[in-house]
Image (tube, rainbow, N blue to C red; front, top):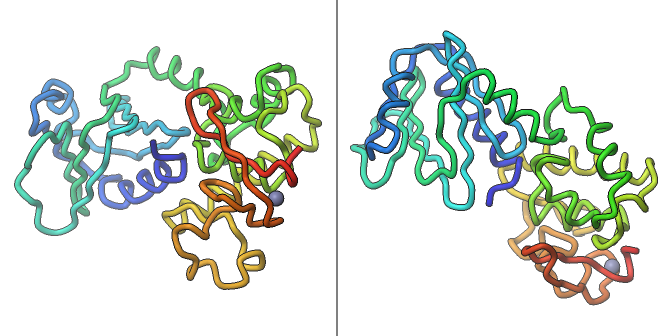
Length: 262
Ligand SMILES: [Zn+2]
């Protein structure tokens, strides 16, 4: 499942191709033909990302909601547009190119009530300027659930997936099994700040690199695949060199260094 930085990057890149002009819409696969017909010929004012959700805002207050889920993917085309092949749910073509959407969990047109309901169940997103971290703290600070589970709950805080969960907790010395209610306001603020920084960095670079150049001892651009995280998929902690523990946590693998995190 893509984490929030991938979705915000998709919004940014697709805004450059599509926003600000009339778009053509079609559903080569046929499963979204009715929706594509509604969108075809409307001007797209912009694309907004909220956690792992995308909202495409068209004229006449028409809103398209897309969630990639586990298997969904975007393919962008500039210049010559290839003939549609396979299961393309939606193809959007604008002034700068085209976007093909395959295999999403959600691709639907929302009425106003449905948009409000959707946004109400998405927690604050550290990548959004208008996010309200206090809304996440209000949930986390009084929860007996583990902070590792809370960070993955998209209704509590939006956009963090398995890699960022492991890394955000690690650099703040917080063990994933600690209850949300055991965190101090300062610890939560540090988690939020770290999540914003790491996610923003991911939007810029298009990949997850959480290790600093200082800790890595070389420029971050030169880090190979297995060198980019402190504890996620590591056997030895890249902060202290000790063994990294991994275990199942609410269906996803958690990673932490017992020496650095408590
Ligand atoms: Zn360690």
